[in-house]
Length: 96
Image 1 (cartoon, one colour):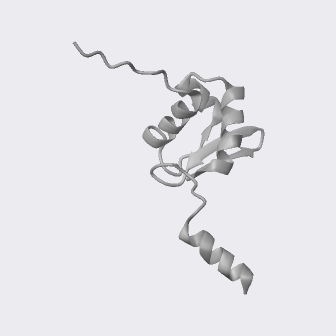
Image 2: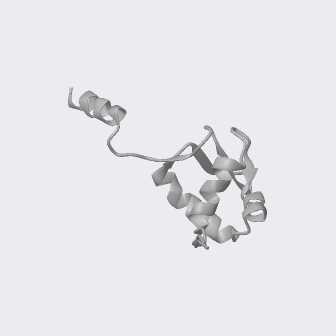
């Protein structure tokens, strides 16, 4: 019998999966709800989301009043790519 060995998901993978599968578009939630629904710690989620801001597109993370909130503005959040057509267009505009 073949037994597929599954490696445990990382915390980052868990967060990305939550955004892509469970979070509705343009429906902000408090970080405390993300903690409750993923089982990850508040401090880990906050640190991870701060790092993701630089590397991923399609999600937002900010403080609103005394609460940190997050939401996505597209169906799936994606990793940013360096070599995109828009980057080359921006480079051309800056060289004029």
